[in-house]
Image: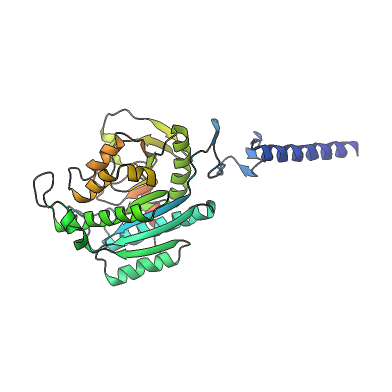
Length: 344
């Protein structure tokens, strides 16, 4: 009987100790079974508390000073144009609409997961579409209706910005109609972000298929890295293969479940704060009105001044031609990501 009483006393004091640690914000780890009693989770589960603290073993806890309040996803779609500047086939060799639908579905699944995990963050998604057929627009709206998100679709009138786009590119050649429509879509998305977004903005093109954990990882990593560096950062979802063709020094930081590599180049899919977006408005406006070489050159000048990161391994696959250095990310199960984004 005495032995039982001793066990009960130990359990009682253990429970009190755990409650006190929880109140004080401390964490306890049981190294025998990798259990964290203060959170009632195991070490392989997510231990971070959005907006409050980031926990990475064995580095410990980082108190978050840069809390995310809202995320607006601006999704640029066009189901009628296969490739903007070339006639090569894409990875998986499907109709362009299939990439758009799966890309959108993957983002919706990722946003839904993030919304459940982070109830205090406001989420919404806006599609800016150019010239898609009516049945394709209806399909996208159907996908949005099944989501847990505030959403809308805007049909682009490319003539709205035609006079603002320079007709001669950096190579002294005529800018094509496809390029004009793409730049018009970019311009519309920039004006929307300027007017509507409150905190974070995620500009997305319609040939990026995401892992379900993507948004969750980007938000937690944004908070952690921005807190660590004491300034907002820019994130990209894709580990671009062309980055490994360069012998250039870089920095590696820890995010939530990914390492994040400092980069100085990207394509047009990126996540950043409204603060940085407005600070470099002229660069973004140039991206939408002048066909540079490469097209993202105005953005690259931003990355010379601000910290920009991409994940290792990738959180999204870019479904361009398989031989493109801007396409398939290394060391990623791209077939599973593609299949998981299939419409039900």
